[in-house]
Length: 152
Length: 145
Image (cartoon, rainbow over the protein chains, first blue to last red):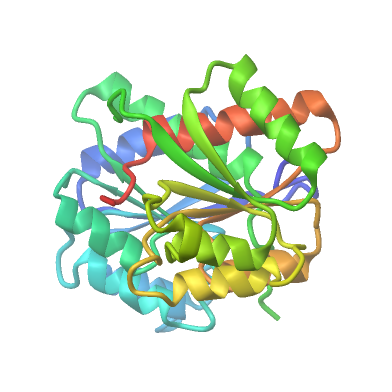
């Protein structure tokens, strides 16, 4: 059932400006069952530059199999990034997990209406945060079938 | 995390054996959700749009959608849900035997929230149902109804 039966690691793009959360996510995913590579974008503009391979710096960036997206981001906020991904015919198939501190109903509804694949509130507590990342890993990397990379 | 209020699931599935199996798994694992079943694509849309005998139904919290359905195909149902302003927020989990790359990609392009292939072995199927429930009802924040 694993998505990387052929041995290719799952590429995950984390869009997150908080270095502490980046470090924790990295640790939780490193110990996971499924081989994965984590790339990080620190703001919304960088996330879209990576996804569109804009500039030489990102020309070899792999297209992610899964995106973890914070909502409160510098330069371009997460809702805008989500809106752009989910209306782009080359990108919209990529599952986007919104992972944010916001628990506002308005943010939750807006994210689903913009076609976020799921919305998860980031727990404040460390162990709960690690549990959530592990649940994401278990569900999206072993239970779900991800679209396989169709880049030509 | 969700409170004790029961979660409503709409299962869109034409195979009575699969429906029965799903009910049994939910019951045996004490997953206290209300399961509604639509046997074809037209019935699913009537349920969601509260037409006719479904006028008093509330919107489900989650939809489990098979792809191969009579009358209206699962792909069409998915597309209608995800382009309807009042329905598109509802998470749709595709649960199907199809492992075709084309079906997987098409479903995500139509904004399925996730795609899961139904395992043939019962033990694995039970695990999948439990994991779907754990993830969507205790980890994820569902949209307000």
